[in-house]
Length: 435
Image (tube, rainbow, N blue to C red; front, side):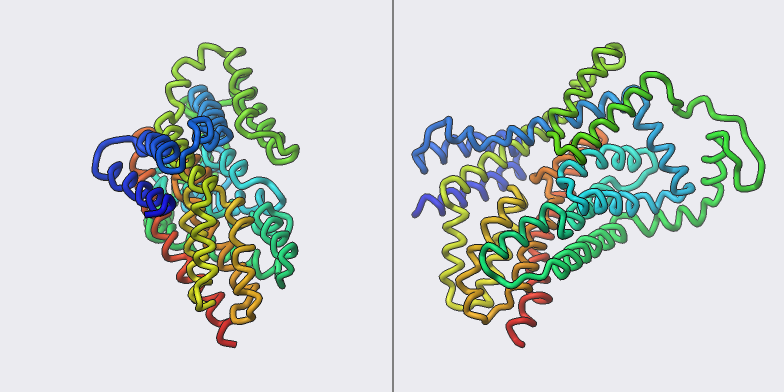
């Protein structure tokens, strides 16, 4: 049995054991990475540790630390309340607002994790306060960020189009972008309808006074023209919340405009706020999602070991030698989805498209259709809790909901991992091969 096959079997066992037994999957994956790396691949421990996602660790710790501070001092509550006023009390609109905001941010060139890191904490806080399914909210945040990333100036779009040009393949940036944003919107719509969106719409219709009460409590004019005294329980801006909002603005501008590292920038803002308001920082370090950090760190370390030792390339080469180009196209889309659910989407887009060149040059499979299908298959799985975006959603979920959010996102991610390649292959690849 080859080392690649053994490594893949161990990965399956990690999932099975962690599912059956009450053990952190990340801890189990770290042990597996050590054993497989040293005993099967014969690499040093330092090489195994080289795959640990230090950047993802800093992002998860920095963002959850900062927003734990913001939640402690009431800033998140203030933002959520203002968001309710912005949508005029119709809470069913908020998941779609988050989808559009994330898509717009990434469409102009921001990194997908940066957009999710900024939007997800507010979105998940809104979901907790207004009884919106956190899985639905998180799914729509991630899909919005994913779809927007495929604009011609978005990161995924630029990478995919660049690899296509470098490989001397025909491309169509418009088809890529609109197909990707359409696929993400479809997944979001399905998630919205199956995870409680219909009930939210019904609740908004049956509660027309929500808007009036919300605006009245803020001291604004209610729908019936009357005014109610402001509710003292509602958060108001004080010095601490104002500085926290300024810190969040610095985080957004630094990450989205100046491309500064979102993790270190979030940590810097959190440290400054802690120094200025030490009393409000008590207990915030305990609220960092350490379990999520361990889980994602362990899984990504193991998958990075497989990538470094050529297991992913081994799979790709095997696909390239499949005699039927149409079957090879489906398999490469499936591999892209599976690997991307646990690793970097950016890396997968850059690695798998060149592998498809040999059978694309036969002319039996349309290049634009396959590249688009592969790009969508490898990106829409980013809602998996093992990817950076999915992990950010889990880490920012309410503590009481965190385990459920993880399990449900894993179910969604694994389902999309199988369904997306099938649909993309059927809609985008097969018609081109038949024409």
